[in-house]
Image (cartoon, rainbow, N blue to C red; front, side, top):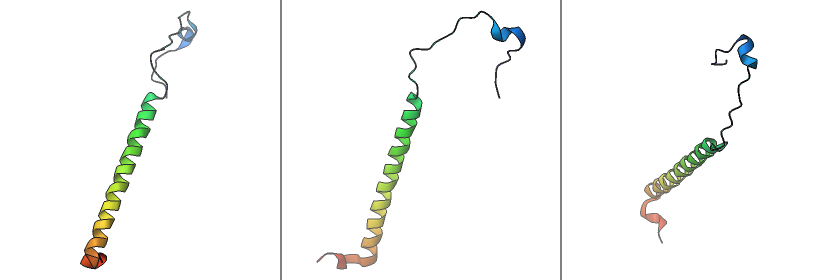
Amino acid sequence: MSQHNISGSEVFGPKPFVILRSVRAGGLRRQRKARTLLAFLAGAAVTVVAGAAAVAAAFGPGLLP
C-alpha cells in the first residue's frame, strides 16, 4: 500500500522529476548477499571442525598409525 497522501489533480501537477544519480542500484542487496555468503561459509567451517572433533573423540588415538 502506498504511504503517500496524493490525491486528485496533485498527482499530475507540473513538478520536476527527481533523479538520484549518486545512489547505486542494488548496492545494499549486494552487501546483504555477501554477508549471507560469509555467514554460510563460517557456519560450514564450524560444522567441519566440530565433525572432525567428534570423529577424533569417537575413535580416540586409534586414528593415528
